[in-house]
Structure formats: structure tokens, C-alpha cells
Length: 259
Image (cartoon, rainbow, N blue to C red; front, side, top):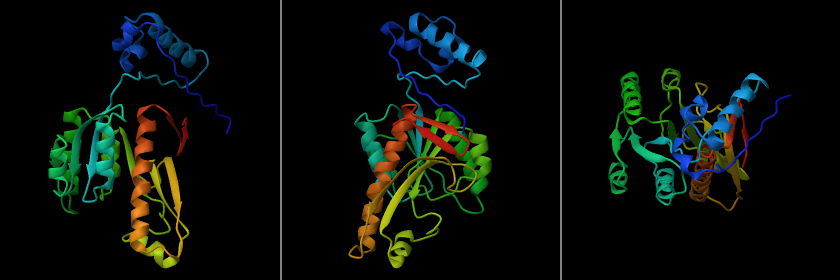
């Protein structure tokens, strides 16, 4: 491929300048001191002298995240509980859903819930409302936690930010409804889950993380579903953590993950 990828992590010697470590401050290189000024100078040197693409961020940054859900609640509860346990360096600022099923649960966690119904005839209006909400809340990352609607190419282009999705790894072999029933009927020996960035090409965006579990002829559909949900929780949480820690680099339709 001829491309070299590198991730460098350092700790500023001057703790007093931590508040200055915003992305804009580092990129601008103004009114910085100590290690932050050196970081800005390195970024300028790497871009102009070495022709490198450079992205710098501070571990103090806490991106604002919106979680999109439908009716399935396993990934939703898992993400929120991990967030409450401070596993994620982010702020959950909105739970957005096309159904009301998880409204009470979201409010029970103290999270704002927004119901935006989606039908074939109202999809454009619904996506416009979603985009307006994301802008109002200053959202920087969208996580699709089993959100059972396809985000249109127009939405993704207008949004411009990152969208992380989770799905069972049967795609495209077992696309459509009841994937675990399809898999059981075919006698699969492995089931899995995949977390990826959403793009205009359905379920074909850059993959962040995947995992699998073995199954046998003894496992029924309910056991496949249970194992699959466990995988979806773990894979989505790990992908989100790596993204928030700046460990994922996207190149074309692939990712380089510094785990």
C-alpha cells in the first residue's frame, strides 16, 4: 500500500495548560505554551515539510454524542451504563428514536429523549428534524444502537460527522428480517457482530471492530439471539471507546485501529 500510519500519545509537562488543549487551539498555534506550542509547531512541520496528514486532539476533549435507537434496548442500556461508569470520554446529550418504547428508560437515566417518527412518506422531514436537533445540541458523533432505519445519503452528507453503526455479521449472507432464524436454518457454526462507520453504501462503511462466537447444532434460535446480542454490546462499546480515544484512522474504505 505504501502508506505509513502512526499514532503518538504524550502528556504535557505543564498541567496548567490542559484547558488550552482544544482542537482549534492546537491547530492555530496561538496563545499556547510549553508542550502545546511544540505540538502545534510539529503539526505545521509535518504537514508542510513532510507532506503528512496530521490530526491532533486532547484527551481532555469530551465529544457530544447522540444515540439513535428504535425498540431493541440491549445496546442502548449497555452504552448508557458504561457511560455512567465513566468508561467513555464523551457526553451523551440526546437519545433519538423513531419509537417511544425507550422513552421512559432514557428519562430514568436522566437523558433527554427525542421522538422523531419515520415513515416512507415523512423520511425527508424526519431527517431534517434530526439534523436540526444535532445542530442544536452541538452533536459531534452519532451512534446507531440498533436503530432500525437507514440514514440516507443526503442525511450523511448534510451531517458530515461520524456515524458508528452496529449489525450482526451475517450481512450480506443473511440480509433482511429474522437473521438469526436464517442462520439457524443454515446450520452456521459462527455468529458475530460488526461495528463500522456508516456511509451512503448500506452496511459497507469502514469496519472498526468485529467479534464472533461459536455455536453448534445444540443451540436454538433463542440461544443464537442471546449470544448475538452479547456480541453486539461488546463490539459496539469497544468501537466507540477506540473512536473516542482517537485510535481509529480511516483510509479509503478501511480503518487502521491502534488497539
